[in-house]
Amino acid sequence: MDFYILKKQEKLVAIPADEQNCKEYLDDGYFYVDKVAACNEKSALKRLQTKQVKAFRTPALLLLLVLPIILFAWMQISR
Image (cartoon, rainbow, N blue to C red):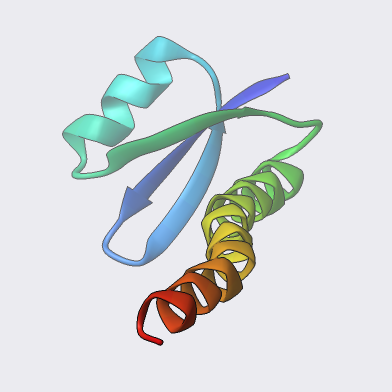
C-alpha cells in the first residue's frame, strides 16, 4: 500500500495515498514530503527515515573514499 508522507512544522504524518485526503491535509497547512510503499503508517515513517539516512550516507562514503586520493595527489604535487 502506498502512503503520502506529510509534514507540518516538525510533525510527520503518513496517510494512505488518496488524493482527496491529501488535499485536505495540504489545505490544513501540511506540506508534501514523499510517497512510500509500506504496510502501515508506522512502517511508512520508518521507510522515510531509512531513505533519508541512505541519501546522506552515500555522499559521505564517497567523500571518505576520495579524500585519501586527493591528499596523496596534493602531497605528490607539493614536493
